[in-house]
Image (cartoon, rainbow over all chains, first blue to last red; front, side):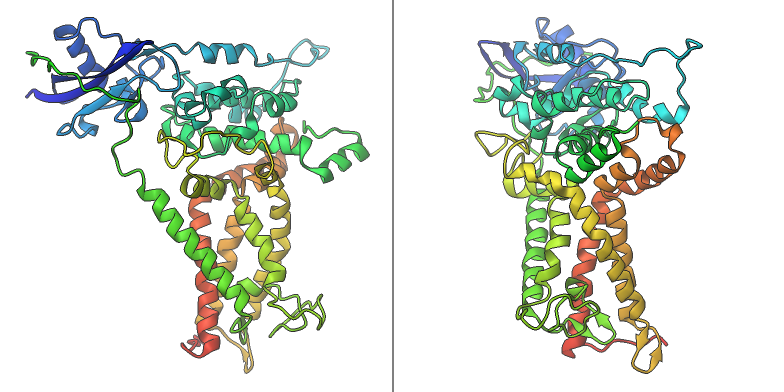
Length: 253
Length: 259
């Protein structure tokens, strides 16, 4: 049996906008994105909403539902209080293009600044070798679908856009962690993380982890281990002295 | 499926992103209440300089008791010239360990500093530098507090085992169990620490070359995943342990001997 949801949708563009109210029918089993498609098909054909897979894997339909960053395709209508208006707004951290579509190119600019994977010279037989336990840890980071909800919710750039120049954001700390912990990578990105990527600006309030639709433990498994690696290099005098004595450097193999 | 006619009057808003309408403020308020209550109690108990020894139980706030003026001291490093509470000599170390703990940082940045108070709720500050500048850059000393906490744990376990030795011989009281539980909880809290996990194996890139550290890291990771819960339980545990010893020492309650 169809029920009616009161949707309150932000509509506008870079010059401004406002919330519009719509009453849209929905049925059991629908997700919020389905209801927006009904709205598009019946009342607001010009509503701009980015989507692709409807399966929580493309990371396209990120938005703010009742003020919380979420994937609309993974938000079941039955999980929302449909007796109250449901507010849907574009991600706050990025500039609006139109309606629910934002310009996320900040993330692609940050991606360009990540120093690439750098393997050591090939061994004599020409084959690189890794054991499963060497890569189990970084495989968690490869689940990232680049929905940028973690970037959206991170208060370092959400509430302080001026920090975008000096803060890579949780999505890219995950990328840095995947590279830094990779058993075959020889690049050392710790100074870059400390000096230019703003790792120290993260105050580990874990909102990125809370909103990640892939369940990546961004703070515990990526950001804090990176902070600890930066401590190894810059804030641990005992380790520094030990590395000078042994000549091994502060980076572990 | 038939559409319902759209409403004619749009609702203007000042900000682009509407605020959360759920009770996001409950958790920061509870955190403020609990952490503030603990700090007030621990400060009062530490400064009182009395009722921290009820033979054979020593309050964890005073362990190890390092001054000659202790009611019970194993290592009197500070002579008679130390006139103040011996808790002052030791509380700064576990206090610093908790203050710089990655979990508590999350808790108090949200609850006390409102940076941010909850996810997607605006930060209270106009400017934000996080932990990249003084004084918060000092949070990076966390691993040193972790190192300091290890010998303190040894003393707490010593206190727990000494709690079997009564004036009339070997025995066990409720206080013995309380001290054992407190030492166990504080050990779990220390071992689940992010710095511990990193130092023991997290800094290694090739686990296959360090099998012992890999096994250690895997086990500590299981604990680390529960660090926040352990942090709260051990916080309550240490305060309740002090309270138990205090009440026994004051004669308010009598320790029940199990055997």
